[in-house]
Every structure is written in C-alpha cells, then in structure tokens.
Image 1 (tube, helix red, strand yellow):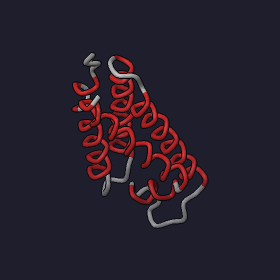
Image 2 (cartoon, one colour):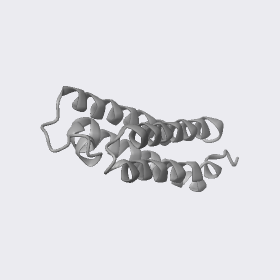
Image 3 (tube, one colour):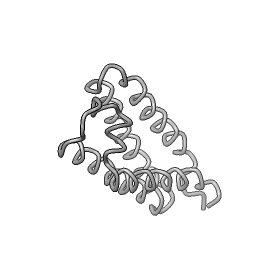
Image 4 (cartoon, one colour):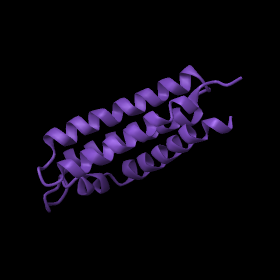
Length: 123
C-alpha cells in the first residue's frame, strides 16, 4: 500500500484542482490566457467547468481505484486527459501562452505517468 502513495497523492491533488476549477472556471481561462483581458463569456465558463469536472472525476478515480490494473487504467486515463490538454491548448491557445499551458499539462501528465509502476498490486 505504501508504494501506491504517489498515484493516490497525485489523484488527490488532481481532484482538488478540479474542484477549484469547477467552482471557479474563470481561474483556468485566465491562467491559460484565453480571455485576452476581456470579460469571460459563457463558453469560457463552460470550458473551465467541464475541465474541472473531468479532473474531479479522474482524480477521484486515481484516489479510489483498487491497486493493480484498475489503478493503472485510471492513471492512463489521467495521462490521456493531459495529452488532450497539451494538444488543445498547445495548438489552439493564444501564441503568447501556448508553451506555458502545454508545458504545465505535459509536466503533470509525465508526473502521473511516472506513478504507473507504483500502482501495481504487490500482494
């Protein structure tokens, strides 16, 4: 169980970030520099909320999945979410913030991927 602390901790952090983002979707839109200094519209709030809810669900799954393949699948799903963020924000985000936002998503994805070995069932 102790070896699984890393993926569980990353799941908890993801869940917490997702809850914050779902409750305050403007925070993600501003951090990603998608508002361009303008008031954030409905579509921006919806995008932030959806990403927040996705992160709550993926984080909770990493936190609660049984050890072994279920936890590894939860981690792979989380990494896939991060890869879609890298692609979406990296290709469609404003040029001034593409590298920053894609880099953060890539870094989190790599960190989660590095916890795959710890997710094995060691019974």
